[in-house]
Image 1 (cartoon, rainbow, N blue to C red):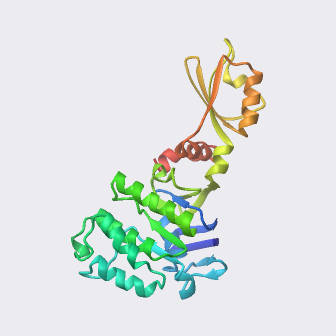
Image 2: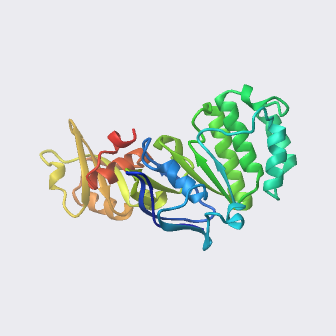
Length: 299
């Protein structure tokens, strides 16, 4: 388990990360969402021991990360900008990582390189951005670490490759309890893979919740009420947003599904149904309640 407690990092007068506290459970996918400059990359570098916090602590199972070889052996960091040795080939990078990570799976590396259609003996500096990302992902997966830190990992990958990488992550989570921590500016990119999402804004966490918990406690209800009745007349429910087009009203309601259905039935609407919210809709609703417009922050 990774724990951050009151972590702060400053660069001169800029507060890149501002008293962030978060818990990342093993075997889950933790998504860090935020615009450019929100602090995502800095937080990952702090978690990876690349940077030292000015305040607070980051630990892996109680072990501090900074300048701790034992802790660093447990994760692989895939940066937004890909870094490789000058004129190195994927095969040469594999030889390097095989020394750093004792459980590096060479057989799987060769298989994935072949499956991805890459030439393991070609110089990486001749690869496209997407191909370089693929090499980084393959190295990270084959390092067989407990944690994988991914900074905009899906950026630059085509849609088919994105789904392929997500499938590999899911398989390793099931087989060996891999824990990916994924930073992205794209909410839609993480919707089908994350268990827990933290929304960063101006260096701080604006919102951090389990997706299942959010989905179970917030619902979109489409309904046609009895003639003459307005949505504002519905009582006993926490309605956080109302939209109306003609006779069709769309309500965003916080609460348990059974309670929402039971209370709506009391008013005997002509028609109503509960529709699942997308991750984007959930965050829009949650942040609007907190006084922020996520559409300006991320979308």
